[in-house]
Image (cartoon, rainbow, N blue to C red; front, top):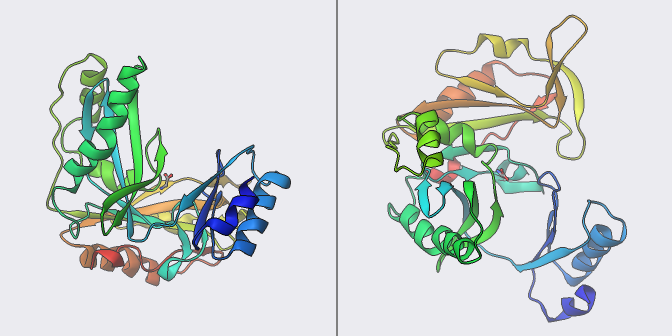
Length: 290
Ligand code: GLY
């Protein structure tokens, strides 16, 4: 059925595996031939744990993420952020779980958060309510800023990775009190900073996303300057108890500065002075904001 319908579509065409695929279940097929091969791979060879696929129009524009804390009909949006899903600079290469992010998005219209809440998040919350589904948690809308406004490309019911490391540092009020307030059906006080841009650069194994790898020593990350934070992901210990890489995305470095250029200078300045064999990163995270 899916294969038969392919002749009617314009290309490129987006083909998604319907299920968890660690950020690797999306293929942008440039031709009918590539679409046919992809569908056979996803369904026939059970490449991912999926029994169905989704075929979508290819949307053009910058991708961004709108996450919100939800309790019943109360929506507390977070500052917008922008992930970089392609493996290599210039958005080249295969899709990954995310190679870096920055937030807020000062180059987008200032009312985009409200537009996203009213056009995308609130209709979902109303539908859940109509269906008597009580929802309390995080909604994550993956959006594209098209010429005709924001359009949805994906939804998650969780925080985004790496978006979270550039969004949550902006919360000036207390996260625990906000969550407690929401759980007790109160309207919590929520305050986000507005003066700084936060930038996160993911450090991955050389072979990511094709393969995971293990064994690179991470001692250098113990000696970061005070304006750089590290969040570890794919790590473990060697026999001597030293932290080593173990996976695809190994860690994310984060900093905040008054603009994206200064934030890039801090993070990429440190990374350029500390090359680490066996690991790699994108060197253009944040460029789209300039
Ligand atoms: N940054 C993509 C995700 O969390 O799904």
